[in-house]
Image (tube, rainbow over all chains, first blue to last red; front, side, top):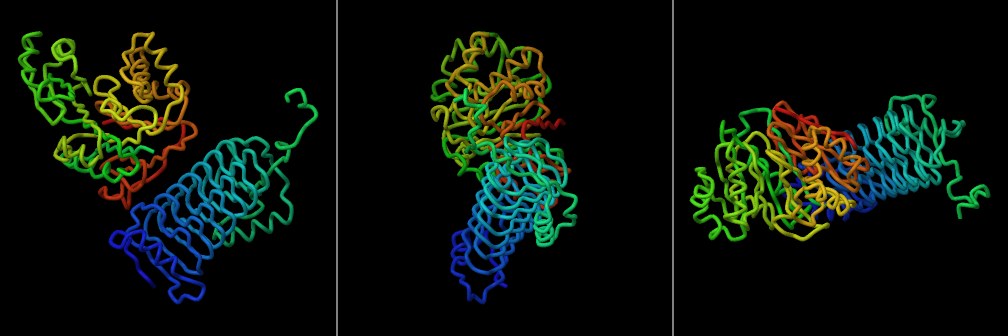
Length: 227
Length: 298
């Protein structure tokens, strides 16, 4: 286990030490103490290592992650796991706005609540939120799965392209072109897998699926007079 | 950007530390806005007395002989404590209006930063560290306070463009964001006789709240109606003589984190600002909801 005191050693040294790891590294377990809300902790990793952050983080923790597992034993500031490509980011507490924004792959687990714009423009990531999510979540989401055990705020899935949104609780309002959809066997399969991976205590049958009506970007002859 | 910090103490034992704690919180937010900084501190209430915090670009000239000039103009004996470019004028509460009117006559270049029983506002161009040092904020005690560090977007980097803004007696406002309808609202408020000095958007926000309260709204109601009447991005933190409030616009893209324990309620633009507060590990930490008015009172 490599232990790293962020307060005394600094962010640049931390991230360059983590970037120095490759697929064959023996230093597979890292522990970061005194994060104290610092920005850009464990950003841009590309090695199969496990990084545990003992405390809360600021902006962009685990951003652009590839392969690595980043576990925050606290809450995360804005933009956690932004543009993640693969690997796993787990937040024990809450996540601030735009968690998992634009992420292409991997799994983001938030054990508390996520605030506004969770999964905005997501491009293939899987996100599981044990609590609630805020307004404008999955705005313009393109692909991937967003699973919410609690409730969703206003304008869920506004201007959605393609992505599966699964909500167990209530949805305050749906955004433009986002509709309720049937839960087919393949969706129950996805949910079963993601709930297990995220250690979430819920049954797939309890969720409702939402997705794109696929009408927003298509010409409709009835609207001809508007052009 | 811009950085906001706020601290509302519940535990009297912490009051001597207010200036110190708030200064540390604000310095942590320095890289959110290096243009100007300001702090509002709510100190002890001296019964029948009130105070004005005034500022001058030429304090040596303007503060010299000011006590005498006020006495001559109004017959009121004031006390004057100089602090760099600012001075605290203390006087009987009943005489405050007369003193303010006389100030305009005898020292037209002096600006009133705040007025009230307990509030003092200090603000200048520069980094939080330097501004706090100039006014010796660390040594100040008080019940609650608000700090702001500015990254100017809507108007020039000047002392008057710095936050906090006074919104009335013992009231102040700080803002992170930008208002987009401030020009039309400024014209509307000016037509209604409201005095607005700068081209700054937040000053319009502050004047709007003052104007609403002059027309019978409570601060809470004024904040509620700001959600309808102000267009743009805002996280506001407001202070009153015995209270402390927070409101964010419905989009809520300007960051805000709050923490509450038995000893205090704290606000920070980022969690970083709160990390050294006592007992923060066990505090209730949350992000204020959009379009929701929060308020705490002593």
